[in-house]
Figure (tube, helix red, strand yellow):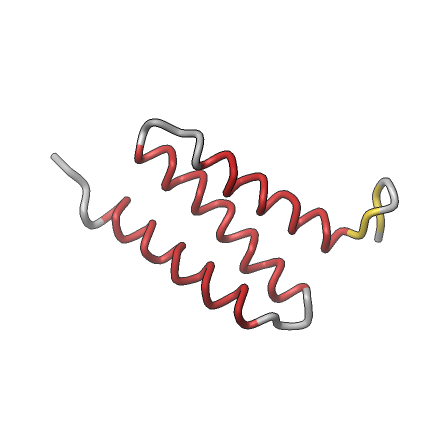
Length: 77
């Protein structure tokens, strides 16, 4: 499936990249972690869409877990 001559898999990769780039423009750490987590989750999906690209999957899954840890377990009161 293609849109504008770009495959669906590539679109997922571009969205993941955009999410990560956008996250680094955030001043608020919570917003940064949330947007970065979305980008990482998209990269994990992208890694599986590329016929299991383990370096992409493992790295982004680890970053996603770290973000979730800090968002839910290390919140400042």
